[in-house]
Length: 268
Image (tube, rainbow, N blue to C red; front, side, top):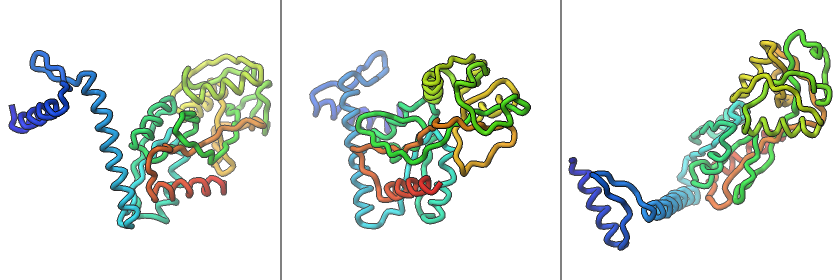
């Protein structure tokens, strides 16, 4: 047993004596948090986060902070361009980017609530109390069809016309799947799903291979892919938002990035 371990044990014992409540269960040389310990740990975490936020706020007020921003996103491809532009203006700002799976919106909420992410850029609304979401971009929804498809020459199409097409979709429970299902429900169609994927990039590859069609978002500024044809679906859109926690301190740098993203996407 190392001396450092003994010192930790000593501090834990003193803490339990001070509180008058055991925080750990000790069984067969093993030690683990009990229900009191878990409850106390959550409060300790909150206190330490509050202290860290206080330090950041003081640094902002004193003008000594170079700026550090933590951003979580499930739409990284849409975020790299504006961050590059922002860093051209503010090269001294350090970034921490957390890429989150589109199906894990709960992880984004937790990161915001714990203060581990300043902002979230998301293509799937979080819809949680205490989380402020600002819509920044509306991407039109297109039907992607493979080369040689009978609809390839068209510019637009209604979803009602696609009822007999085989669709490539996200897996059940994926927020993008739920959005697409709602669009088809409104159109009154229930097409066959021939393939299910996790990542957006897989949609285009499978459409290109001729396995089926897919719903994909795109903006006017996007480069048109040459491998598949995109047919606009009038009135169908996907909204991207910037989210922050209402009860957490947002540094000057994070506030500046938030304003920059709003203006950046507004110009698109």
